[in-house]
Every structure is written in C-alpha cells, then in structure tokens.
Length: 78
Image 1 (cartoon, rainbow, N blue to C red):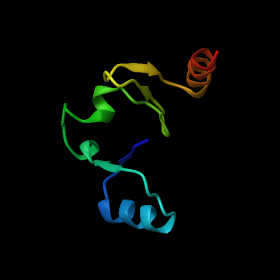
Image 2 (image 1 turned 180 degrees about the vertical axis):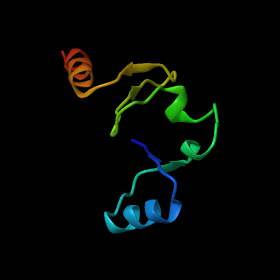
Image 3 (image 1 turned 60 degrees about the vertical axis):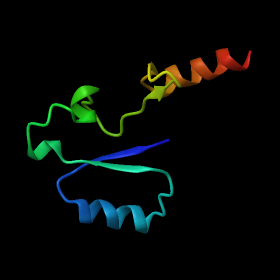
Image 4 (image 1 turned 90 degrees about the vertical axis):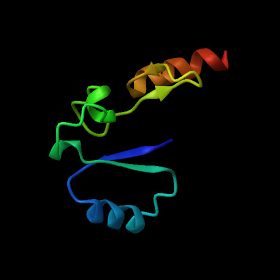
C-alpha cells in the first residue's frame, strides 16, 4: 500500500501522517500547483479522492475500486 497526497502544503501532509501514525510509504504530489504531466494523479486520471488501485507485480492496474478488488481477491482465493 502507498498513499499519495495531492495537496499544496507538504507541512499539512506531514502533520497528518504523524498525527494518524501512517506507517506505510507516503508520496506527495503538488502538481495541482503546476502543469506536471508526470504526476501520478494526472497519469492515472484520478477525479475523486480517495482513489484506490490494485497494481500487479508487473505494474499493470488490476482493479480501480473496492468492488473490483474484492472480486479479484475472491477469484484468486478460489
């Protein structure tokens, strides 16, 4: 699991991470302040937050919402 904060204020993001003890990897995307085409938010065309993606070992997106992820997991456990 990785979180990507899409925000303008990295200090606000750091405070949130510390306050809620988020121990998994965190990334910061401030492309809303610029036209950075390599932004993960822009590349993945995220429109709503939070967004969820299940990504396979090969980097391919396997699912993009909780229902799809549950279905994928159920199929793998059969």
